[in-house]
Length: 105
Image (cartoon, rainbow, N blue to C red):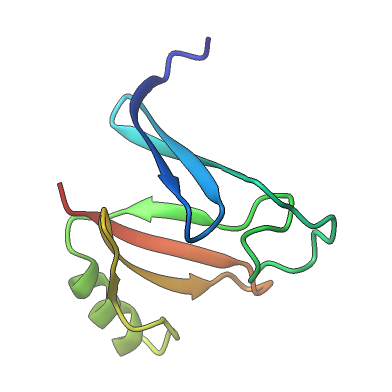
């Protein structure tokens, strides 16, 4: 309805959820649905809590971004690799997580 094209659907039984990856004009939106959720919106570390967990930005080279950020004194998680992407997390000034990711395929 909003012009997004579905790129991929996948399930993560290990997380108890499923997701859909949408695309519009080169921008991607990943939407998750979990089997069990918790009403406390203040717990941003638990993916099963209802609400927005984090915002993600796609980059060409996550390792380069990691080194650039940490060289500027910004705390970031060590780069990790999942099945679809390499990623790091930083926090905004209010402590909300921001994901920086590099798609693998």
